[in-house]
Length: 327
Ligand code: SIN
Image 1: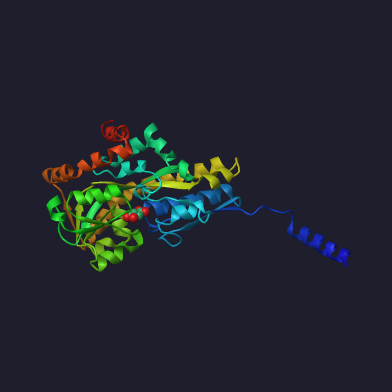
Image 2: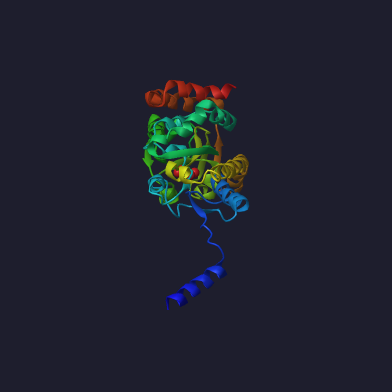
């Protein structure tokens, strides 16, 4: 009998061929739609990995908070339930205070300045700011500058006074809205549309691509083109997962990610133009462009927030980021 079992097992192994290792699975979780800079970047990463690493590594992308919302994803990553994510830089507050830098209102005049700072030594060093918490920053990806959407017209800070705005989980963003005497409410991205639709809140701040892809413009009749803050992302993984990758594979996975980020950043730049136009063409939301005097009022009221958080972020870092505007 034993001989028979051995013969069957031998025959089966000959048919199946030599044992092959199962591919390493990278679950990539995010909260936005697929047709956004981050969504496109994640899909590109998946495609590049499939193309270059064949059956050694497989990327599975879970968009639209299908797997985890941003409030859960980093804990899930530390538990090994997800391997990659790219939360907004505003959502790392409970892991590090340094990244609050990116939430300071009117810090960067345009995306070129953001790019210059992120590529500088100080910007790259911030990718290591999560190390102590067991996470590795693998790179930044852009979305763009934020606009204010609302249920009533807003041109100057006084117009926002008394209104309720949804914000990401960031004390800097809370302080920014408190500076104009508005009420900030920290809520997950997945709840924003319903909060706006039911008028539980009066407005929110986001980029053109998020306002368009999540249809916020359909339930917010006014958008102020304020460009007052940044919405960018950090692609992160757990140190444990990253260091457990075979040495031969790690640089290849990183290269595929870097290439996907370059692609995602091109998408971001184009979408900031195209999605703004789509919203304008829809006629559902009226876009207000600020005069230099109106804009100056926002800067004057919101800029004191910088000092409020200087002791946590560091003056040197704030100066380094601000100086990227003038290079
Ligand atoms: C995202 O772009 O990932 C979400 C931004 C938000 O929560 O407003």
